[in-house]
Structure formats: structure tokens, C-alpha cells
Length: 313
Image 1 (cartoon, rainbow, N blue to C red):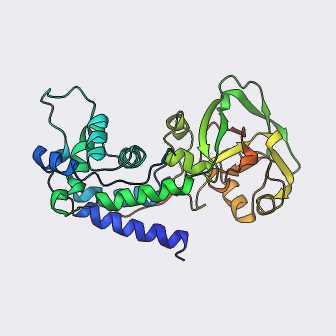
Image 2 (cartoon, rainbow, N blue to C red):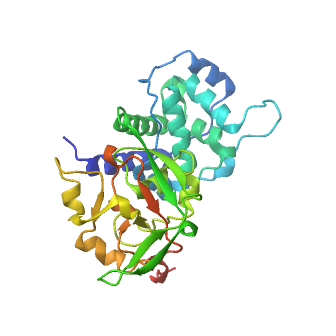
């Protein structure tokens, strides 16, 4: 069996290669012809969260093509939005609603403007009427894999409270601040699937309020625990200071509360903006069913060490 990391790396290489060989968009006549094929993908009602593999593939290949040539011309012939036009095109190729939405979400999350969606997807479709795909099938396969990953998993609600609703009062024995909640009026909810970590919600989430969360969590190191920009503070009622995080996540152990950070995580938290007694890195908090309703406090600022690293031009 291929490991999760190996599968992501393999998918990253496939998508990168596909995107670098994007072809010109096909004609309207080709679209009509391809619609008759109606190749069916498995249906799924799950929402799609674009993964790091898809995002990295786009980051690596975006400089290899000019988005202008994929822009849809505004001739006033259709009242549909670019997203609706792109969805209609994908459906005509036989992709399900869920897969079509996942493809569009992946493109948008990786910097493709709405005005270029249809042209980009047509380019990736290649000469599909004669079976010459230019990357769309690979991207669709990646989306399908992610849909299967969340299939059957429950949706959870996590509440995020900005710094205007809490403050640090006093210090604990280790010199860390003690978070105190003043008001939950400014808290906003985010719907996520179990098994997702908090940093990935901010980076790839597409549900309501994910865009708001992205304004608070930067996730500069892409979730490899090499920075503190996804620093969050767990509501004291959801934190268990007596259990290490690895023990809390172990099978058969109560998972209704979040445990303390590991030594390696604490090293990063020591560099965070005003760390608290219940501070954790978002990339290290994986959500379980028992954490439905979790309340996370968002710090007022963040320390990004990446800004101080000198990169050669």
C-alpha cells in the first residue's frame, strides 16, 4: 500500500506535469460532441477541501503559463457567471456535481481568477474529443480521492473567537498568560470534516467563514511545524493540562479535550506572539467527533520568522 505522503507526492508530480503541458481551449463544436460521451464518475455529496498537493502543483507551474490566454471573452452572449459556465462544461464531460465543484474550488484556492476558470479547464481538457487529455483527468482523479477521504465522515462545528472577545489575565507557573473570555459575541463558526487540522481549515477550507479565518492564521510553513504563524489558543474548558497531546489522541483515551504540546511544538510556541497557557499550533490539532463545538481563541497578532530569513534574489 502506498503511504499517504507518497501518494500526495505522486499526485503532485502528475498534476505538475499536466499543468505544464496545458493546450489551447477546444471549440464549441467539440464541447457539444464531448457531451454525448457522458462518462460517469461516482456521485458524492461531500464537500471538497483542496489539498496541499494540488496547491503546491499550482504554485510550481503557475509561472509556466499565461492566464490571459485562458480568460473568457466577454461578448455578452451568456448571462451565466464564469463559475456556472465552468460547471456546465465539466458536467457536459460527464463529471459529477461534487467533482466539478471540487475542481473549481481547487483552481480558485490556487490563485486562478474566476474570469479564467472556463478557459483554464478547457485548456486542461485538451483535445478530449479524441481522447487527448492535458491534465483535467489527473486533477479530477485527485479531487475524487479527496472526496472519498471525507466520505462518511461527520461534519463538525468549530468556533473561533477574535482577540476582541478575550484577553490574557495574569501568568501561570511557567510564565505564560492565562486566557480569559469576556464575550462570545464576535465568535464565528466554521463547518469542517473530522480528521482535518485547524491549519488546513484556514489554508484550504471552502465553507462559510473560512475566508475570515484566513485573515487570522497565516500558516507560513505549510503545516510542517517550522513556524508559529498558525498559533491558536484553546478555550480553557476544552484544554487538559494533565495530558500530553499524543496521549489524548491515542486510541481508547478520552478525546473530548485537547492536551499539551509536544516538546518540538513547544519550541515553536515559545517564539509565538504572546503564548498562553493553553496555546497550541493549529497544524497539530486534528479534529475528532468529540471536539464538535470546540472553541478556539485567535491571538491579536503573529510572529513570522520567515520574514527574517534572507533569501537570495
